[in-house]
Image 1 (cartoon, one colour):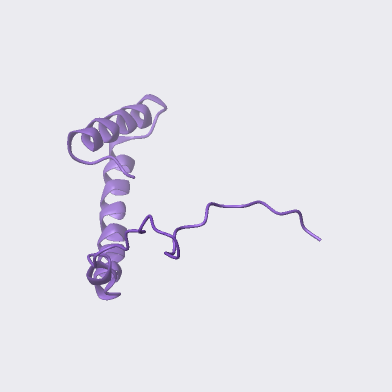
Image 2 (tube, helix red, strand yellow; image 1 turned 30 degrees about the vertical axis):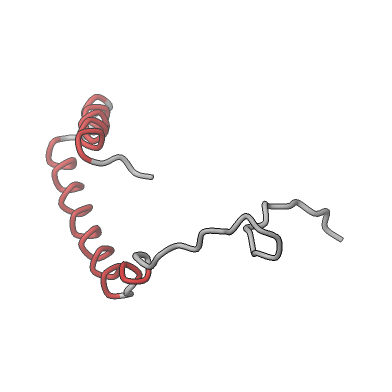
Length: 81
């Protein structure tokens, strides 16, 4: 999960303040933000084109608590070999 809204704004400001504190110039910070926006647009464009947003809205399977119904198997760790 990623922070959003005011939580993200607080995180972003804290991060930018730390960058300034260690010596990054305002020019480097602003150019980095512009670059990040360009990369984000490309990623979001790809995400919209791959149609995942349509299938992710399908109803989820809810396991039935009756004998013979499928239920998610918890993870198991088996020795190799």
